[in-house]
Length: 440
Ligand code: SF4
Image 1 (cartoon, rainbow, N blue to C red):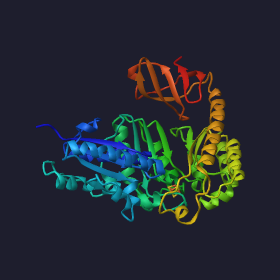
Image 2: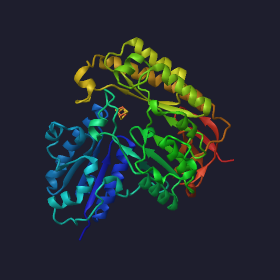
Image 3: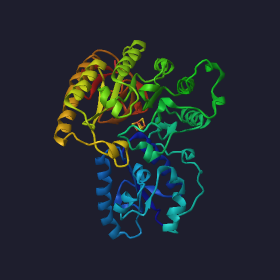
Image 4: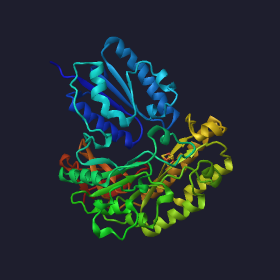
């Protein structure tokens, strides 16, 4: 008998990607096989993102297309999980997704075997872990892994749907985190990326698992970084996303640990104190600029990236100029600008006017983009004739490609056997989005 097949499409952040790896593990445990062809699938799973209106629009349009597949294959089971179910308090989203059979929050994935067997008794029902973060992921890569250390958020920034979609902050037990990373190192994994909505606010419920040597460190997150630095085999540690207000001296010190990548993603969202306050970011412009200075005093060559929202409610041209001005002052290496869009159920949606026109949001978005490209190109030129450390992710037509420790995509001539290893090419050409190197 042919095996049943599943297809997963993941939208949004690394947290969703990691959740998809856990769902793969459950589905494969039930004997289903992965397929990249939706027309072959018996189960289609969409892991949704609610960060922007456009991300949700893609789910609506995708489910419309899938409804055509369902006409040809009536037994097809369509599931939507991720952020949309979490924030659908009044059932409005579910009502719009008529063709969807299962609509559930990520944390409910442990019920998948029971639910799928209820819809198709030919599936094998299996026992799973009761808590979804205990489910062992089927990692996509053989040398890089996402490791969630926390889910949810208590901060309620006024524009953000995450606390509604994923709930309030829950920290994963330290024992589970260390076990997972030790197990990854035994399997030959080189890089781990720690995930959390406010990753640097991590608090261990079982601190007795920290080794005695680091008892002089107060911050649990800094301790965790120190701890992972001791794990043999792991060569690169990356984490995302921190909140500026929890970047204390100990966490800044941890940026100098030997396995820490030379990159920090530090979301600021706006350069205007007035707008930061309206966003409930709990710090002002001066605090952030000073924080970047403190980080660079400790680690002068670190690359820093940020997130920006342009056209937030009440953002004037002057406020936006302050964002551009801050960008120059902080000399960011990269930014992920987003045009503000209202997310229903948030404080901003209920209380503020989305009063910046689409045209003006677009203009501001391009202004950030232009400034970023100018600064990024200039900063990339500084790598010329220097060696960078690259974890090779792919090989094609004689070229190796991967991210440098500063999260610069780097390409150089190499061999297939280099995939999964760290190489140190010397840079001879620098474009905006690509460094060209050679092994010397
Ligand atoms: Fe959302 Fe703010 Fe929490 Fe980040 S800190 S997840 S932006 S509420």
